[in-house]
Every structure is written in structure tokens, then in C-alpha cells.
Amino acid sequence: MRLFVGLGNPGAKYQGNRHNIGFMVIDEIARRHGFSPWRRRFQGETADGVLDGMRITLLKPTTYMNDSGRAVQEAANFYKIGQNEIAVFHDEIELPPAKVRVKVGGGIAGHNGLRSISAHIGNDYLRVRLGVGHPGAKELVHNHVLGDFAKSERPWVEALCEIAADNAGLIAKGKDSTFANKVHLAMQAKGFYDNDKGEPKGSNK
Image (cartoon, rainbow, N blue to C red; front, side, top):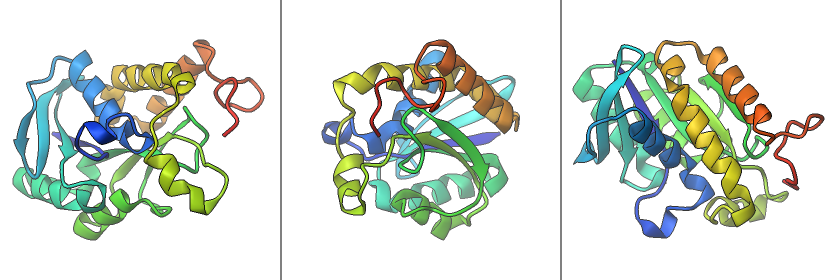
């Protein structure tokens, strides 16, 4: 089995935040693949289903971002799974908006959700990094990630969530680079990337 974790903050106040794009992708996986109804457990909300023959539990911690690791550790202990069976979907300010990168381990780049998870289970889990762009100055980062996506950004956000969800089975099977490539090609085909910059058209991030 695999544990797919989406990072975000619970509650309507944060629902449209850039920081919550991990929740958005996990929600879309549940919708598009007929997962079970959400239920509260492991200090979060979970839904169960199957992707490409692999049993998957989706987890959205409800501990708030800074304590995400508590929920992940509880779920990992329950299922007796290691870091190599966990994928974390999270916002990434070091990537241009709409870009996706996948990697195992690495730094946390100031992301408090990743910091908490690494403190609780170790650092060698898979990260699906979902680009939300950098505001340009360190002091602006907090308001940037806790701000809602602009109306002009919503088309690429919705497309990215749908495309990532459609290809999530590749993550389940360990085909990380294939997943990243398929997402990139699909977003490019939909016209969300400038050919030269590889960024959303009209983006100034």
C-alpha cells in the first residue's frame, strides 16, 4: 500500500490558499478515482481507494501545517509502512507557478509542514513539489503562501490538480519521473506554459 499525504491548513478560511494546494490535489485524486468518503482519524481526514492496482490511503492532516508530522507518523505506525511508501504533496515557492517536480528527500526550504514530517518520520519520503511561485522577497513569503490564488491563477490550478490526479497511479507504482513528465506535457498542451520560460502564460512570479 501507499500513503499519499496532502499538506494544508484545515477550515474554510484557508481553503483557497496557495499553502493548501496539497489538499487540493489529494481532494481531486479522491474525486476522480472514486475513493471512499472522508473520515476522521490519525489526527486528520483519510479516504481509501485503489490506483493502478495499488491500495492507497489519502491523508489530510488537520493539525495545521506546522504539526503535520504528528498525523503522518500516526498513520505510518498504524499501517506499518516506511518512508519509501509515503508521498507528500505540497506547495513549493522555489518553483514557478504550475510547475511540478518530484524527488526523494532533500532540504525543506523553510517549509514547516515538511520540517514537521521529517522530524517525526525521517527525511527520505517522496515529495511532489507543486510550484506556487516566489513573491520576490523573504518577508513577503508568509502572506504569499497564506493568500488565496488569484482569480487569474485558478485555471492553471484546476488543470494542475486534475492532471496530477489523473496520473497519480504512476506515483503509486514508483514511476516518479514519468509522472512529472506527463504532468509537464499535459500542462504544456493545455497552453499553460510559455515555451521559453516554462511558466504559466501571463505569470509575473
